[in-house]
Length: 411
Image (cartoon, rainbow, N blue to C red; front, side):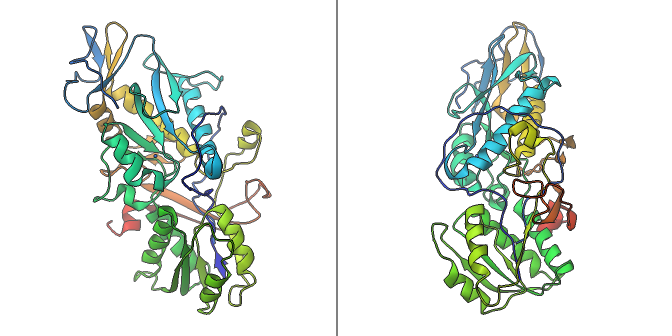
């Protein structure tokens, strides 16, 4: 029996937004699992006379523009959970954001880099009218129908390093100002299904998820791929849990009675620990092994003072650089040294991103905001992990590269 705990720390509604300071070195294989988240300038045109850079814009048209005065910083907001239950996930991404800003000038020197001769400044208040764009949210539930709508209605680009729920970029629910560098869970679910079939020779599976969009989206993606004709597996039980529960024995007992070859439960870290502990005592689930997916940066421990605490610092680093490239493309440089950035032009610049080389992957943004459209995912077996508590020398026991079109069955 196999169980997959998700490596992402829990995404509850608790937690705040803050800042840190760290740096980063080249990444690793994207591993997203373990086996078993404006105001407008009143200018009517680009200020300051002659211009260069992006095309001239009409700032009277909604949602307008942001004007950055000569010598003033370009302000980028963050919506990352860095306290409470989600602190590990948010702080890990924030390290990547700050490292990305640090390295905009090509040097990790502890100083903010520049875009078009303007320093970049982080703001943890996303409602600031001078914010050009926002990096976040940490959790899919905080973005879906919440931050994506609130910011999108103001014309503010929201670029997430860690949202993975498929609904955020689905044609019927995607907000046109929302993008992400994180992979779509449809890919992860498909790779887990392939691993279960090819390596574990599983023919039956059960799934378990909590109330979060993240875990429900992953179990759905896994089921869709595992039961598809290419694999022909059978999901014999689908259960849901309340993340606040202290005992999962009743639901695990119910699952155990079906004796599935695989139990797929992409729940958050705290829940996983409890489920794994209690599941080992349940008949039919007693022989499970724990697999964790992730390959992290070797230097992270030295720079952050700890082993990697989540999977998305590199995605956040890439988000900063992708956004910086889009700002350079969209901004109008005025003769007085100021910048005028049309919110629509910035959105379009992000949207048109093609073959942008990051440290995680090469990004090409889809029409509905998925920028990591080709992803390599690895499965690692604990304790061979480059994580706190692991041996730090792990190698994947299964890797697969899959496009989003392949995962969705559209290509």
